[in-house]
Image (tube, rainbow, N blue to C red):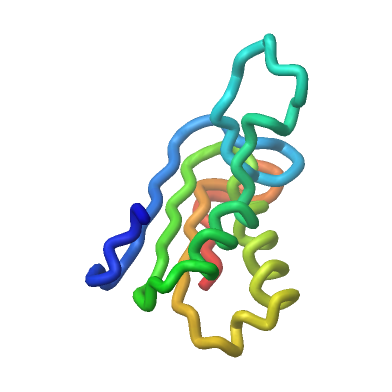
Length: 109
């Protein structure tokens, strides 16, 4: 596993293209891709890995991409919907834009 179990904090810093629908990270910009969503990493993808691991530290995500504010709202929905807020997991998600790219630096924790 890529997460060191002895670490206090697991941090992801993404800078790049953002998906206007999900705020997810566009990691495949090839025109040959038949599936428009095949190259998008959503916050649910990341949080699924984090919550299913044995890691007991905190997680921080910094996303500097268009529509990254949507990640904060999606993370809130994820944790609320899965009742993970009650589990005491520590997380912080920082986004460089709001939902519509207009406001700087949105944070959810």
